[in-house]
Image 1 (cartoon, helix red, strand yellow):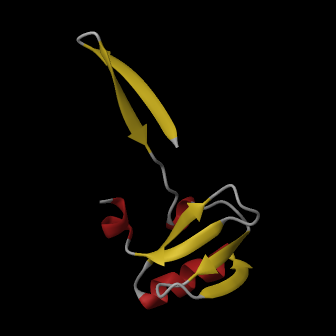
Image 2 (tube, helix red, strand yellow):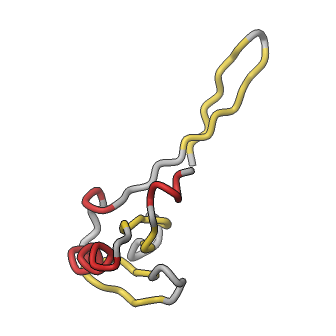
Image 3 (tube, one colour):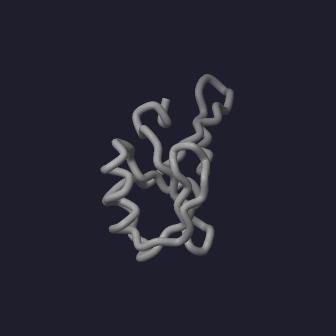
Length: 82
């Protein structure tokens, strides 16, 4: 999570900017996958995880990029962002 400080009228305002990678933006060769109901599917290749997410009508979203391997979930990314 990045926190940016901007000065406006003598006061500092915090702005949080969270970046999530989704679908083809995920660069790890393998990911730990959690399905749409919260059940773990295990560690699988990213290409296979992406095809599973698309078959089920979801996006593959990286929710924990610093884990080894990164943790991804099947989500509707549009709803997740907002």
